[in-house]
Image: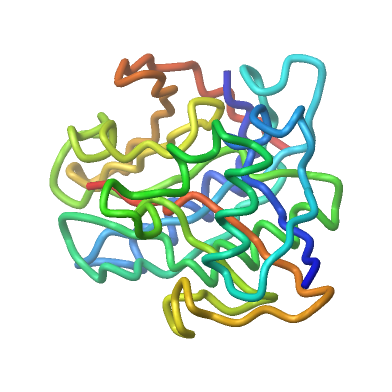
Length: 91
Length: 140
């Protein structure tokens, strides 16, 4: 599957300034792996030390937060729009 | 520097008061200009839900964030910062605010409700360092 990935401003520098990139995969986990393969510097933003998704990013398939779907196992279809945004929190 | 239309300043304070007793939060959008991202003129304020529903911490509801991000993008703008309230402390970033600041290009606005008159201040947070910036209110 080929999907479009919208990048947050903090990650665009790792993709030559692009705000959107293409990636391949059948699940969000595979799309994330493909992003890191293409743009290795994205790993620190996307991957937690345990290999899961970094807790400071939110990932959406079309308009749904993957935490309410199947997380990294969420399936994607050809042409889906994946959005990555920073988790915005504080005290 | 943060240029802020007076009506948006009013909307941010009102949203902070509406959120009591919890902290309130929202996102700011601006059109990228010549001095972007250091100097921005806020054009939109997107009130968001505090998914943490707490008087001590906030989490911008992820769905509200996506909606704001897409709306800003469709208008040729981008999200340039976040505003949140401190219900009982001054308008200065807490250690949690600094530790979780998601983007060094953003502007971090805090509305303090500690005193009867709300106080709004804005900060840049880069590599754990806090720098206050001027807020210029634009009257209509």
